[in-house]
Image (cartoon, rainbow, N blue to C red; front, side, top):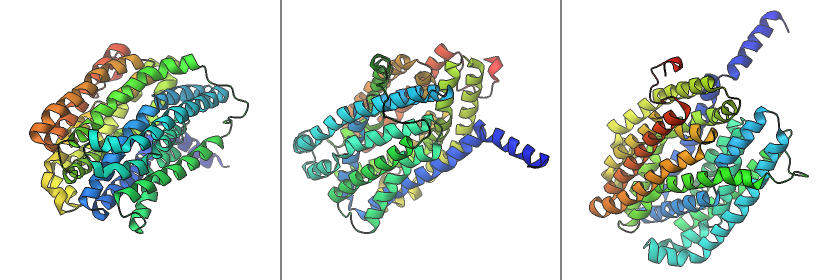
Length: 442
């Protein structure tokens, strides 16, 4: 290798390890993930009748709630423990954490999936007040454990820096497989779409697990269980964080199920999933910075932790501004992509996009707290925002329908992140909103 080529190679490797390069890679992959999810929602809205689309989105929301519950908060705990052990090349401990987390998730999420299958008729009729959704819920019940396991594995891959496979697991493979079933006519009702969703989750989970176990140094054979007390002390507060986060994200849709017809529920679901495109920038940057937060905090490098956190927030706001601006100015055009009937409530997109932008603007506050061992502080934050979302949804939805549900979601999401900013300031000593100031000034 010539000196010039050697110098260029070294410069590339240094940039490759930098936040900007890795964020650009994660951003590109997340674009594909967001595009896959958006495309799937578009195909569902265009392929299924509004009532059937409403049943599918309702069942999907139930699955998200149960799968997240079944994860016990382990996905974030594993991200922290695997990332910190990877920094020390301790692959034995990383493998043990993944093995124990997978076993716990399999047992708990599996139990919830079985429970959903047998209680679907009662749940659909008496709680959701949508008896027609029974078969859809049953067809999607297996995906409770499958989605939980693939989510866990996606976070494990994220912890070791494999951004492409992590995003493919969580955001790309399932939407593409399900979209193929819809476009080929194999899925034509809410029930068959739900069944193919479960199948797509199974295929994705098997692929992702193979990716993980083929990593050098990673294996399960002969590995003892990760210390249960250590894992439980970390994941228990994060479990509450996840449960209350579900309240913030999905309370509006679940409460709306009892008050609005499935056609309006489909419009709310489409608006919320479209608005979440605003925060895909946050998710992209988090793919890179979350493992760095864990490693830097463990190594006591507080100034570098602060610098990366503020730089990440600047990047997120910069990239999110054009997206949220387009949603605020042209909501009708975006909603009409899903069909003429979805255009009628375009203001839902405006409301939800504002909440999502505040989520982006506050930065990676959730990961800053959880990766630095302040899980209980994050739990205390969501103990306020979670019940707030549920109460607001119960009050506003009967009065204003899906507009009230969207407003409740946006207010709760914004409040949660602003409270987390204050907690980061208290525990770590800097304000993620003060991106214009240098770290040494904080």
